[in-house]
Amino acid sequence: MGSFQLEDFAAGWIGGAASVIVGHPLDTVKVLRPCLPVFLGKRPGTRLQAGANYGNTLSCIRTVYRRESVFGFFKGMSFPLASIAVYNSVVFGVFSNTQRFLSEHHARESEASRSRTLSDLLLASMVAGVVSVSLGTPVDLIKIRLQMQTQPFQEGNLGLKPRAVALGVQPVYQGPVHCIATIVRTEGLAGMYRGVGAMLLRDVPGYCLYFIPYVFLNDWITPQACAGPSPWAVWLAGGLAGAISWGTATPMDVVKSRLQADGVYLNKYKGVLDCISQSYQKEGLKVFFRGIMVNTVRGFPMSAAMFLGYELSLQALRRDHTVTSP
Image 1 (cartoon, rainbow, N blue to C red):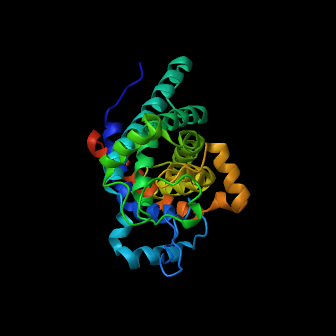
Image 2 (image 1 turned 60 degrees about the vertical axis):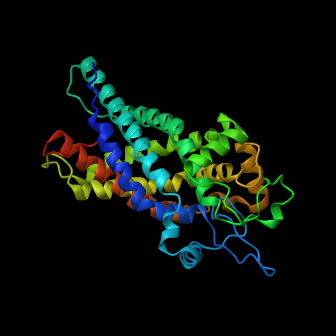
Image 3 (image 1 turned 135 degrees about the horizontal axis):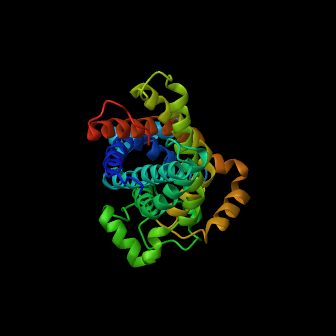
């Protein structure tokens, strides 16, 4: 039987918490767009990925800092910090144990030493991706709703079935729990999985381009004479894997962000295809690469912190001097 190890879940929790703390400020910038003055003939903005008429990333950073100081970049972090740590715990635990089970199964069949193959890594990554969507969709939805509600409602969207809420005057949600209750009351339980199709299309290939590059980069960076990768190798391989994964996932991440942000004030999209169609017709192909620089830059430190936290905590939990790759 494959050796099921709970340490992978505990290490994934620690790594997940580290990645949230490192990456949340840039995640806020990715979702928000610069806020243009709203009164005296001036119009508000909404999101970097999820809205139109946005400014560039640096302008967004300056605007958020000017209006809300450094704390504005950590808005909505309490829920991700509590939930994404659990989310990453499950993802890393599922990936590691699935990959280990497949390797041991092949080793028994061939009576050879256990080794990782590309097919094993691919299958384990896909399983982790599917599991991540079931847990991560509600987490992302709440996070984006809490981030988006600070942005004033755009006047140009008044014809799109607006919700009965003061335009930019009062927040829709009072916190994560109230946000969940409001969504369930107004949209049903299915509302918690708004954007699940886009998230599947983002996360399944995304985790393949996350774990596989990490494992091979780790092996490539680490000299053959070493018993295991150094923290430096883990940090670099994890960061590069994160940049690759998030950079390539940007088009579907844009669609997912728009679908999940949709509903704070209005309901604009009917589904994934409708969101893609409307976005392309109004803004062209470039809209699907909106935020790619932020995603790529953000992906490096987040994933570096994630893998480093995972590997070092796993080493400590196993009380071993060898850093073990997932």
